[in-house]
Image (spheres, rainbow, N blue to C red):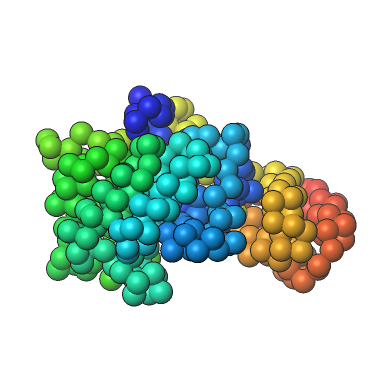
Length: 330
């Protein structure tokens, strides 16, 4: 069993990564149904929370069926991070996570996300501010370092644990790599094997199949793995990995009906949470992933991403059912 504060997780838990414009309540609900053990909100700007920005506050929405669930915040100002942690406390998630890993320029330029990897003292001060502002367990997600010549994850892990961080997720790339090249989990393994480290260490980066999940589980000896991009449009990855761990057998790929049902549910929940218009528009980015690799689907995808009416969209799903009733997944 893996513990983060009072949160009890199964042996070798599977975590859903916080992903901007992806990891919202409708998407998290699907991933929870298909085996995710711990999930996080999209990252939320501490400055936005303090300014009462509507988009930031909307990201605080969590639901009991998601638990355990964490809310992730980012920022480069100690006072703002402490105040935002207090705001997060009021909605009672199970934990607060700090993003020290986002490589996007607009975040890094504000001295936040992966930008903090260049100043470990600041990282520690920001972390202490969050811990001061909440009664919840505080965890961190970060990267190996700023670039290949400044990998500092060993120091980061020790110092974060020393100030009270209760779990650490490490993406096996530097900021300079962004999402390119291969992640290097040997650095994460070294952190895990450090005798000073007692908090759970989770690995993130490039896990896109049950086979790779088992290989990395056995090779690196971490406490669990976090899955990000591989779950987009494919929430079944969590069930598939767990089944493979138990049996050594691969589950069959989700059939067409399962994909249609997942997309319909995602759309329905998105409209319920965001409102019909916004839910329809923001759902459009997901259809390609739900129906990836399906032959002769282009016409239906085009109609799904251009239609503005819920009733007509559900009629299109029914047409897809009829047209692909005998479709065999490979």
